Length: 504
Image (cartoon, rainbow, N blue to C red):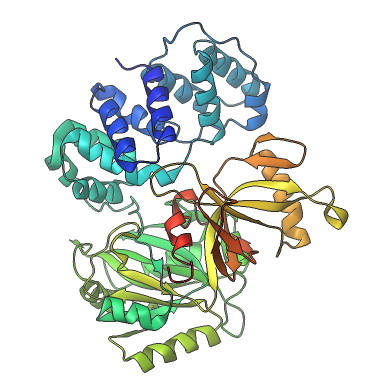
């Protein structure tokens, strides 16, 4: 039986080293010691997540807890899992008091270091999807299976705990049992930025060049009349997008899984502001603002999984099932034709183009650089770490943002700069209220928050700097918008920031 103290010790070891190899070894060592019923909750804890997902506990509740620490470690992983599961089910009159009592009972059995770990866990400060890459390698090492087998199973399951359980229980055969399942979203394949269109074309060979829309990523599943729609972060939004459900039900097929983007258009057919599209995802009704889908990939069609087929064959399937809803694209274009499509995309109000290798299989994440995005300006998706109180006209508002890049080796986000530019009065009011709800701690000038909000930043470039721990700093950064469709695991890495250095 493994104690929570073992998880805390391992977490401390992982945080204390910059070596990816050392992080992997520490996590794998603990995973290999787990009993069968400990694998799922322990994997979640090691990844900085609550077993079973959020528990509905806010920082105000956590800040009010004042419990004497236990003298010795006795809490097991299953103890923690049981209490958190019970807290998640508390509802109704007096639920706040009952949550406080349950959490106080848990913390009362924990020494000081375990209390700190649990409070940070419950408050979201440990939840760092950037650790996923290290966790995948550690699961593979602990189970003695190829990393690629774990990575593929995770793409299809969408859940690290379930993937770890399969790997440690049954090895590679158990991982191979994961299939694309209707109604269970697949983790999306992502693109990495290219410096220029010509560079992307030279790198990838035969390609598809398609519009990069200023919309929101969607994945749709249809099995007969049963339709589900998911966001980039695998959140289901089926009930909020009835027009998309109706459209997918009308496609000429029995079963299909499509990857694409959706956006709201104005009367001239140009994209409405991104925030209006995202507003529909949380709405309770359509409010007459219709969303238009544009699909760019087909992962399953009428009983056949297509993930492992080359993109050119997946596009053939997409043409058969949804030709009228394909994203504007050109296959195997000349450099001139690709440049013309890039200009057409910008003229239509979109962000740029995507360049995709036609021989590439579908794989979650940015591995292999088979998909490249090309935009006319430099932008980065960064994680908000904190904000400073404003001065003058902005007095009383949280203004100057502290920005971090994702650490691909599983550490906390790496600070790369600050900015107060580009913030409208509306955004200032929103982030002042929202950041205080997500607050982890503060000092006289700064409110620090759980590292989970992603903001899109426009910048002139980057430069080397000793001011920030990543050795690089943003130049003339300004806020474009927040990205509620993305989580910390989707933010740009410190490697992507450093790649923007002159000559990088």
